[in-house]
Image 1 (cartoon, rainbow, N blue to C red):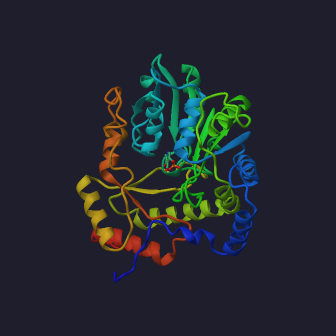
Image 2: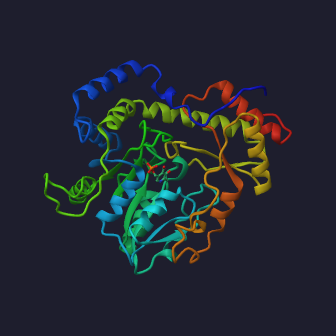
Length: 376
Ligand SMILES: Cc1ncc(COP(=O)(O)O)c(C=O)c1O
């Protein structure tokens, strides 16, 4: 295998071909000023809304803040329960706990690793204020069904879209049919800033107005503070970078889908399972999850891949109800055996639009080699 390595991320590759133009714009912005809520922020918000098919979007400084501000704007606080899935990235639950509300966890499904909506009704109580549906690893959850269940229970649906920009549920882009879609543009994401950045997509003008106030100190005009807010604005510089990349996003997501198909084809004969992709366009492959038969196999394969120069990683090794800061009083209310198995059995193979044929070949050979086989 020699010294060949396959890194998880190679951020600068995203600028290939366009860096001169972008650097020129950055230089122009640096010399012009307007760093806070400059014109590029409004331009990006508009372009993002058009891309998603959302009524409006509000740029904020991270995906975590998108969730916190959304829950705040919806009035979620102490005494409330917010239902979410047990196998998300920790920020989903951090936002709930940060608002002083109680996270209530629902297990995920065996086949697509997303919230098991059959189990959702059991988790809803008279204290439930919101449901945060997470489109994990880039795969769209069933938004219409979640909306119906939330509506029947009188609960607000929020989508954590951090990993799934561009994905569609039943043909509609995620983050556009619920009260709010929360987006992250952190550097690892399919649409990535050069640092922290996020947004919220909303349909309701009143909710959007409240979110705009919240992100900017609750300040409609200078020296007027109507409500208690945050300092959570999307930087003009990040908006400029995101504007530059947004046009390329669908091409990159298409490339991710091709790479995922290659993994499935070349590794399909091995004792591995993959996240069910769903209909065309439902999965944008932020991460490519591979499920092994046991923790021993997963750990052995992981160690072998790392020794072979493949930057494989476990996302996520600890289910949220087991995290001390995120457990809350309802952590043990509903057992989450599937989330626990996924935490023990899965790992992610590198997937990024610039992954070369040699790189994916190396990863497939390394995976197959560990099982004493050859890649198909
Ligand atoms: C599912 C999920 N939710 C929320 C976040 C938080 O986003 P950020 O890192 O921009 O705060 C992330 C990613 O980082 C995520 O993957």
